[in-house]
Image 1: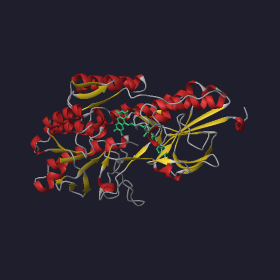
Image 2 (image 1 turned 60 degrees about the horizontal axis):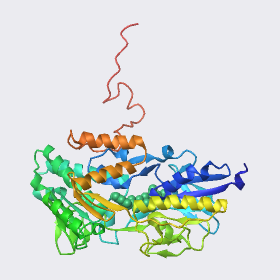
Image 3 (image 1 turned 180 degrees about the vertical axis):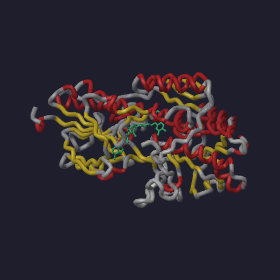
Image 4 (image 1 turned 135 degrees about the vertical axis):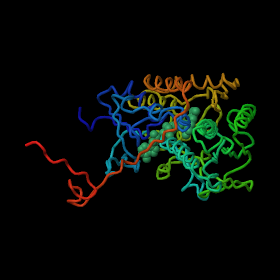
Length: 450
Ligand SMILES: Cc1cc2nc3c(=O)[nH]c(=O)nc-3n(C[C@H](O)[C@H](O)[C@H](O)COP(=O)(O)OP(=O)(O)OC[C@H]3O[C@@H](n4cnc5c(N)ncnc54)[C@H](O)[C@@H]3O)c2cc1C
């Protein structure tokens, strides 16, 4: 088949939206030798974000919540690279990869924009330089490492002034990511502190700062208040109607005037659509690309937008769909079918999906959930969370690994080993200095047998 005559479908972003579009195309259009489907993502894995807090809290091993894209896709080509620019008028995308970040230009007939969102610090002083975030696998590993290194340092720090910022943690944002993170790391710290002989649990301070009246507003007031009560009983201080205003090396300032002595702020209180979209000559709503009900970008036939980076009309509410994994993965499937319909000249299908429910874990085998309008709390909600998300995690191997981690968690305490990435120390001597017999080196034994 002549390469030029192939229909080229290019998917940008391998999160819930892009990956599920690729998986759906894999089952249909990608089997056609006249069609070439390529997925570009800057990591070679798909991250299952609902379990991210479990990595930060040392409940799960870091690789168990990610799946290599190459094991998920066989017919769809995968390009491990960074999208640098999108040239819509000329139907080209610039991608860089490799250690030297050299560039490639990829052409397309259909373009799927699924680049997700980024953390937004809203220009608050000190946050860009100092706050930790919870968006990527690296973020969860960095948070876990920070918690452990703070405990290690505090254990041999006799000066209370130096010790306090290491033992106080502030999480900003009372949505799902913030609540699940604060619950998980609070349990982790309180369990881990037992291994540090100079520290006691009472020395720890964990604070959740939320701008609204009640945390987890998506689940309604009743479940939000229940979650607050449970977290408070486990030692988490909850500051509602409060915002983080700035952060310095040893202080987090709040809008109520309080200054919390802490060197660790986890920011989950704001996201914005991927900034790359700002360069596109398309209509946007609050930064998200406006897509029609078929997920096609207004005014750009053959360009599709979905997931967190897109504003897709929700026919049941009349408002844009919320930025959730549930919506992103279903939009991925619909976009794949609509591209197939466009290629084959068939009728396209509008996107319609009603949220089935929402769940959150709040630590120590407790959860809150609203499923099909019914509220659940406590152990039942926690069990539902684990069962539903385990079922959703792609690939049997990873499901089994996660299930084993959870089972072993019943028998053993949480691991407090830090993940180190600096290479081992090495030496590089001037010529002669490193030869046998040179000062500081062990001499090679003389040959005694001839
Ligand atoms: C901690 C956390 C917990 C969450 N929990 C839930 C939950 O329980 N339930 C739920 O429904 N939703 C949850 N969400 C929200 C959910 O993760 C998002 O709505 C969903 O991931 C959106 O999918 P997406 O494909 O649009 O974006 P993403 O999943 O963010 O995927 C975007 C992809 O694009 C890639 N990318 C971005 N820029 C570039 C570039 N320039 N070059 C190459 N690749 C690029 C990224 O690496 C990423 O792989 C959670 C989110 C977080 C952060």
